[in-house]
Length: 289
Image 1 (tube, rainbow, N blue to C red):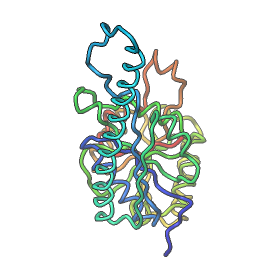
Image 2: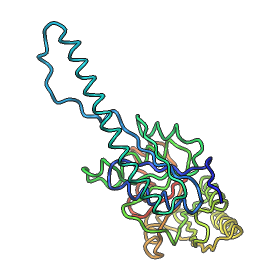
Image 3: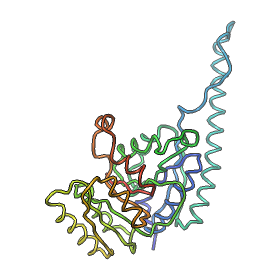
Image 4: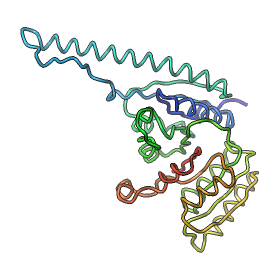
């Protein structure tokens, strides 16, 4: 089987130990669907530390021009150092991903902002892989990286958000709510080889509407017709609590769900069920948009 160069998997990595797990899951997905894997490292130029030297007293003939020249040279030196550190970092990750079974691994470094860069890179990508935490979490006690929601809202590709540590997924759960997003997700999974051969639990929870059972039946039939072994559960109640409990009770390795259905402004005031579930589930989650 040849590798399809038009449908790559894009794994977003930064220089933290979380990058190892992003590479591991990216390699796992690439091996299952026999797609090329690209490891993308975005160097945020806004995070380059300025010189700590005090230049406030720089006066005299040509002092301003000399100062600008010095600052430019310092900035170029920092850029070269960041680029070289990124190259070494990416080469190690490429070797790791290849050893994990990825059929083809490429690397790329870009300068800019992560969200804007990923939006630009969407064409030719069938799946993105993103760490649920990142470099900023190395020093900040946060349980959900600051970029996760921003990235998921900005791009229109499925995003696999991964947790610390790698465990090959064996049991999959789809938090199916009957929405257009999750119905499209059923079709995507039916057509893809990503979860082929793995049992899938279809779970509908929350406030179930009268058509919920019919939609759940449709999802089951669609996936069964595609060759999946499917079980289904319809459990009314608080969706976050039901999903979290089922993940534990059924020893689920990977969760599939729709993502961030409300506006950012609504999320600011009322919170986000997606973010809550990402915090409570503690397992890799494929977010559908």
